Every structure is written in C-alpha cells, then in structure tokens.
Image 1 (tube, helix red, strand yellow):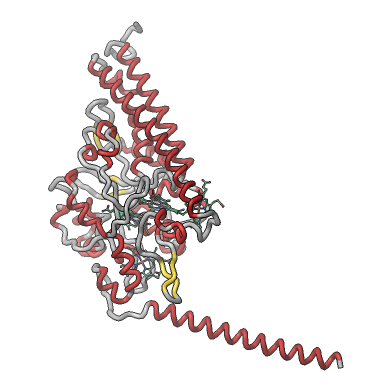
Image 2 (tube, rainbow, N blue to C red):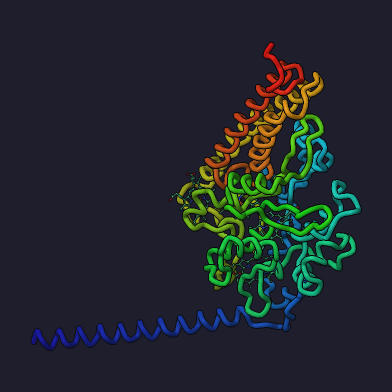
Length: 435
Ligand code: HEC
Ligand code: HEC
Ligand code: HEC
Ligand code: HEC
C-alpha cells in the first residue's frame, strides 16, 4: 500500500518536473528568439554607416535615448549638462593656465550629441587646427581613418574634414554584429604597445574600452606632425605617464611667469577610474553611465550617456542597497573633499608661480631656477590631472587625494626653492656665496 502511494507520488513529481523542463526550454527558446529579433533589421546599414538616424531604424530605443544626449537636464554640483564656464567659476585657472589656450576659454563638457557643435564653436581652437582635434568628436572619423589613413586625417585642417555627425553608434559598435568595437587608432596603438590583445578583451572590458578611446590623457606628436598618441608606455597612473613624458622631454607649453615647461592634462577619466575600487571590482564605465533598463520584456542599455547622479536608481542601486539620498551624499562628500584639496593645490601652485617670477625679476637665471621650475611642473601635472578629470575625484577618491597632497607639497617646495634662488641674488647655486 505504502509502496503504491510512493509510486504515485514519484510519478506525479516526474510529471511536474517534465512540465517544468519543457516550460523552461520554451522560455529559453522565446528569449533566444527575442534576442535574435532584437537585432532584426529594417534596413541594412553599411560597414561605414555614420548616420545614427539610419541605425535608429533598426534600434529605435537606443537611438531615442542617444538623441537625449543633447537634452539639457541641468547641472549637478560639479557635473551635468549645462555649458558651464570654468574660467568664470574659478578665476584662478587664468593664472594657472596662463600662456595656454585654456586660459582664454574653458567650458565644462556636456552630452555626446553636442560634440561637433562644441568643437567648432570653441574660440580657444582658432581656425588653424589639425584634424587631430576632431579625433574624439564624430562617427565620421571611423570612415575617414579607413579612407584617408590616420596620418592624412591628422594633417588635414579640422574644418576641411568631411564630418557631419557627432559621437554616435559607429564610434562604439561594429554595424555587422552590433558587438562593441574600438576604432580609434591611437587607442589601438597604445594598447598594442602595452601588450594588450584587444581581440581577447572580455565583454566587461569592452564596456570600458569603448569609452577609453576618448576619455583619456593624450598628446600630439609635434606641431608639425600632429599624430595622436596616448602616453601609456609605462602604465596608466600619473606617475607612469610623468615618467614617459620626462623621458621624452615632452611639454605642451612654457608658463610665461614661471618659465616652467608644463603638461596640460586632457581628461584622464579612464586612467583615474582604473586606479579605483570600482575598476578593481570589475565595474565598467557603462555600468554607471549606461545602466540597463527595461523596455517591454527587454533589458537594454540606456544610451542617454550622462551624469549617474540624475539616474541613481538604475546606475547605483543595482549594486548598492543604500537609499538614493545616502548614495548622493556619499558622492557629494567625496567631491567636496576633492574640491577643497584642489583649492589648496591651486593656492600653493599660484604662490610658487609668483615666487619664481619674483626670483626671476630679481635676476635669478635659468640654472638657479631650474629646481623650482621642475617642481612647478610636477605640482601642476598632479593638480591638473584631477582638475581635468571629470568626476571631481569620485572615480578614485584616494588616488585623487594622494595626487593633490603631492601637488601641494611640490608647489610649496617650488616656492621655497624660488625664494632660495632670489636670496642667492640671481647667481647659480655653485657660484653664489650664501648671504
Ligand atoms: C561607480 C560608478 C561609475 C563608474 C564605474 C564610472 N563613473 Fe564616471 N562618474 C560617476 C559619477 C558619480 C560621476 C559624477 C557626476 C556628477 O558630478 O554629476 C561621474 C562623472 C563622469 C563624467 C562627467 C559627467 C558630467 O556630468 O560632467 C564623465 C565624462 C565620466 N564620469 C566618464 C566615465 C568613464 C569614461 C568611466 C570609465 C573609464 C567612468 N566614468 C566610470 C560614476 C561612475
Ligand atoms: C568618440 C569619443 C568618445 C567616446 C567613444 C565616448 N565619449 Fe563621452 N564624451 C566625449 C566628448 C568629446 C564629450 C564632451 C562633448 C561636448 O561637451 O560637446 C563627452 C561627454 C561625456 C559625458 C558628459 C555628459 C554630460 O551630460 O555632461 C559623459 C558622462 C561621457 N562622455 C561618458 C562616456 C562613456 C561612459 C563612454 C563609453 C560608454 C563614452 N563617454 C564614450 C567623447 C567620447
Ligand atoms: C559611447 C558608446 C556607444 C555609443 C555611441 C552607442 N552605443 Fe550602443 N551600446 C554601448 C554599450 C556599452 C552597450 C552594452 C553592450 C554590452 O553590454 O555588451 C551597447 C549596446 C547596444 C545594443 C545591444 C542592446 C542593448 O541596449 O544593450 C544595441 C542594439 C545598441 N547598443 C545600439 C546602438 C545604436 C543604434 C547607437 C546609435 C544611435 C548606439 N548603440 C550608440 C555603447 C554605445
Ligand atoms: C556593478 C556594481 C556597482 C555599481 C553599478 C556601483 N557600484 Fe559602488 N561599489 C561596488 C563595489 C563592488 C564596491 C567596492 C566595495 C564593496 O565591495 O562593497 C563599491 C564601492 C563604492 C563606494 C565606496 C568607495 C570607497 O572608496 O570605499 C561608494 C561610495 C560607491 N561604491 C558609490 C557608488 C555610486 C554612487 C554608484 C552609482 C553612480 C555606484 N557605486 C555604482 C559596486 C558597484
């Protein structure tokens, strides 16, 4: 009797299980079909389709969200989409960047849809700018790099390049497979030199690499031959890049007051991020700036690339159980600490610049001022790295604080050296008698 009942139970369980498996298979099949449908194409887009509207026919949700990158959603405390005038917000920058175009005009960046308008409008660039300036601004580049070759692209006047579309689909995707793909020759070259095989990059790595084509520190080979390079020979940290620049004897400009040979940092978002806890934990740029969202039954990436602070629920709460207010206030705490250290760095560097100028006016020559100028270079590079980076320290709070601490120290050392040089009455340390 008991055996019979057991048999019935076992049979019943087996039936339920079989049904479950079938249902699961049906569900998987449906999902697969859906995934395939997702890439169903209304139009065939060519290998070099640069126009996002054409891609949009096949992928309307991503296209609609991408179009939002021209929407002004306002400013956050340090970021957001407003066209902020950095020089008006912080007049110290004029002295810090004196002699360099950033002291004339310096606007905070905004959404990708604006890239072409902004690069063309900017007064700082003048009319005589190489194609290199267009490198991070347009999807047409991908076609032009292939058609013209990178060298001719860089050496053509920026305004003469045949570009029509801002940063869009072709900058990040292979149109045949829709896989993420990098196309910027400078990024590919830099990774090759680092021995990184991009063909073996994981999907998660690609979710940051596509951004690292542009959100990085870079330099032009020379004025005569403005080839774009990334200074990553020794690694991504500031110290690694400084070593490279020092070895090459590279500088962007000479500061008119201090006479120091300085580097202008660009926007090392990828480099700073790579030193932080999120990168260490495998969290990519896209995780925070293009989080998944549901559209119907599909999970798609939010192509409205923007400040995560206006999208905390999708950008952070998938991983963190803290409330929205708590998350925002943690970011704010990091950013305020960074800003305060930046204020101190700026004051210290300005004191150094003025001390060197005073010493030079008092007759101190190049040899006597060499030490102070070199310290100015070191301080400026560290402060500028954090100031030009876009997250106000958030991408790697401790590294940002370390660099600003060092910037303050180097700047004060520069000031001391300049005062010593003045006291030496303009003679070199070897020939002068100490007063
Ligand atoms: C853990 C989440 C997170 C990751 C990962 C992350 N970011 Fe950010 N990012 C932020 C936050 C938070 C801010 C500050 C936004 C603000 O101040 O409004 C920010 C700011 C920025 C900004 C300036 C935005 C603005 O509104 O001005 C840029 C550009 C940026 N990040 C690029 C990147 C890139 C490129 C990567 C990858 C190399 C990356 N981020 C990785 C969270 C993240
Ligand atoms: C082809 C170059 C390029 C690529 C690729 C690129 N960016 Fe940008 N990004 C820019 C430029 C240039 C701007 C500034 C545009 C302007 O101000 O006109 C910008 C602006 C931004 C902003 C500021 C938006 C705002 O509302 O203030 C964020 C955030 C950002 N990018 C994140 C990313 C992330 C994340 C990725 C990768 C998924 C990425 N970018 C890929 C060049 C690029
Ligand atoms: C700044 C880089 C960038 C740009 C520009 C961009 N995408 Fe994407 N796209 C991504 C990333 C990152 C993913 C996530 C891929 C992954 O996780 O494997 C993605 C995913 C997708 C997917 C797969 C489904 C999904 O949403 O996750 C489609 C389809 C897509 N993008 C279409 C487009 C179209 C159409 C455009 C232009 C209107 C565009 N993308 C522009 C970076 C970009
Ligand atoms: C994909 C998962 C993921 C996302 C998305 C994410 N984080 Fe994190 N976050 C982590 C991990 C992992 C750590 C490391 C600490 C830990 O293991 O809890 C961390 C650490 C932090 C810390 C502590 C930093 C420190 O230096 O100790 C803060 C603050 C933080 N996250 C804020 C944010 C904010 C704000 C966002 C959204 C803009 C965000 N995170 C998005 C996974 C994530």
